[in-house]
Length: 282
Image (cartoon, rainbow, N blue to C red):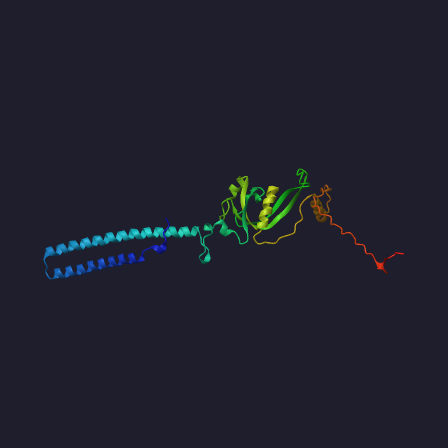
């Protein structure tokens, strides 16, 4: 379990160090005292007893030293573990939380909503996507000519949204993706940051067609007005850029909203009265 370096009892460690130094000082003073007694011809038995006590003090000091040495080694190992943990989970500047600890809600930009869409791996740039990437979203749609007969429809491809941020891929919100596992998967749950209107339209397009992602450069955030892709727009593009006429089939008429015919206000007749009689009267 990682140790909080701030909780280390520095005062206690200092007291122990002072005790060791004091013990060593006591041994030195005792040696000086014995030497003075020997020079003065003191009792040999008393000197031998004193020597035994000195040896005991030295053994006690050595045991205390070994104990403190083992504690220092353990503390060093704990400090190394904390440093390694911090290196693997770097924190942001100004005391902000680590990106790994951020929840998806905290990573969602202001005024945006997080929405998850299941997209086929091949349509998701082959799975070569990371959280934080920006993409354009294409919609492959079958637009019905008549809502009462949805089987009659014409196909078109439209650029639904541009410069959309990917918040997460599966449960990964910050780490680099495992591209190999992405490519083995048939589809990927991808979470986007969109506004509420985009969330509705994205859901509608998913239910009525197929979505495809286009990866953008992180240095480019421009948006373009793109014409929907169908036989007519393809033929027009080839004629303008390469002078090729592919004789594309005519697109069926798209359904149009019926507009109510405005009611006409009947014209008012004006009768002119002259001399108390209607105009033209005899």
